[in-house]
Length: 205
Image 1: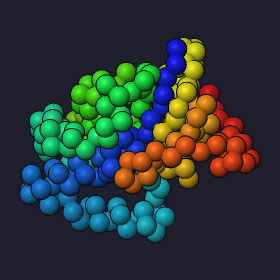
Image 2: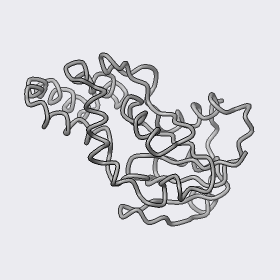
Image 3: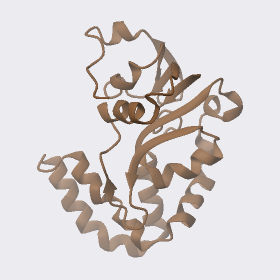
């Protein structure tokens, strides 16, 4: 079966969905302001490299325990679904879509249904507490998650789309064709061997 792989944030939408969802919830629920000191400390520790991005994300979505998560996720996508690039909409996709993203599963599950995305791999969080479960789905973890989910399915990956040639070299190595997504949604094809002359890294299956 032929399929295409897509990053999500700043690839099929022009923004970071997790960050915008956090802002959306803080605007709708001003009482969440009591969490700002916690976020300030966490952000400082990250900037000083005392903690890494995984530890930062482990509790960054803790605000979900204080809101109606399902209602806010639906409201968020009611507002921002229109921002999805036309070329990614189901009627314009040629093949099975596999989205692999670092964004939280509780947020992308809704847009998966709306956009008729066949497969979604993203960072797992506890829906009640927002706590990170397992590893952040980025860099090499994207390939590990892909192999974990589809290693025996025999997908033939035709195209891979991402806004980040710096971070998504691992998933670009899985496709026959590679497309860099610009900030305006424009797709620019490039040759993997020219962008990554040292070839693909060794990935853990």
